Length: 249
Length: 249
DNA sequence: AAGAGCTTGTGAACGGGAGAACAAAATCCG
DNA sequence: CGGATTTTGTTCTCCCGTTCACAAGCTCTT
Picture 1: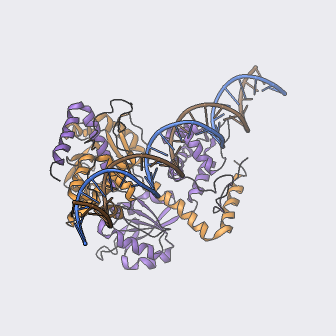
Picture 2: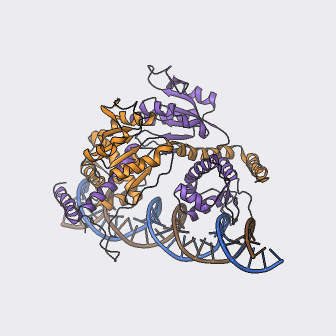
Picture 3: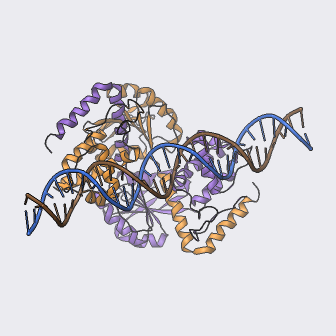
């Protein structure tokens, strides 16, 4: 047992034991949650934790948690649980948090400033390596100990400071052109806070965080709760609205 | 054809035509994206758009987009496309953006302040109805035209202003107790920006936005890109690290 | 030393969403 | 007026992720 580790680029689509490698995307998205829980437990001095324990504090099904962890390897001891510190390190390594990642924040508006000042950044393996804005009036301002530079210097900054992750906090209209510049400068991962869809070449990862979208999803369910609360009558009202609206397209 | 609208609580698990109702969660998450694209098109004076057009601007597969829209009803004209303004309204109605949603923001730290000042809030059907913080030194400060009140007044504010959505921007340690208070006050949807898992009773929706997690997911893929770039050697190094670490658990 | 009691790791069943493909409808054009 | 063209709505298939259930393996007790 114990495949030790199935790293290395999938050499073939053959009937290899574990399918190539590659941890499922859904699992990758949960690893940071486990990591945080483990860090918390470690700080409290807890030495070992069972999958049930971890499941309880992370809000995931324990079977799912075990399967997630099994993708990393066979850490954990049957009948006992997982060694908190050991597992914590393994996850951190898998995510790449044993190194620290220089990050550039672009767009020092409300949100950009807030992120730049966010302390919890460094404690998690990320470092604000540069702040960039298109407004020359902002150049020179300091946030979290880092000075703002102009967008024109982006290429130079990215190269100098070996930045591979960009955080996009510009207005929607600027998102795509700035994303293009980021990619050209050599950034290969973008966290997009701008309320706009950006398109990037293959090989560049984009993740999107959108306040409005999240609120709208909540609103959708909220509306259903309200309708359900006032029962059938309201339901008919909704249908009526549809019928009326359908009138003249 | 045209089921008109399949609203109302699923009366049974029977073999009813369309499964009860309920738009798939994945679709709900995309509706806001379509809505934004349609609003943009409407502003530009575009009257109709095909599923291909919309797919291009939203970055979604056109078949998926059509299927998504079909859950709302049979808006759209074969051979022509969708009437931009009409579809926009239908989606807005489905999400519940024809009314406006009072929102309370709790925790006026960096992020809370940024959100409170965020203008794009109101334009999308949401209104900052109240700002609340636990620090009495902050009480009275104004952000985006709204004054900060103390956490103790939460119940009263929520009731008075008919708030059903809470935005949680407190430190991690405060997240759970504050969430409990929100729920007790009558809030049934929470957008959680705090880096902590919160548990709430059934019937309350929680969505989580977590900067660190997003960055860590990007870092994971970034690490793989780098390893792939320097080929097999680095891969072996990783395995070596595992082997060494396995030494003394 | 053997059995009892936990807890992990995983095989298998299941459900939901993604994408391809196509039939049905609407318009356009000759 | 009929056929060509466009584009929707929908069916079908596949794949990924979740969950159940259980054998394998570790520890502790007697």
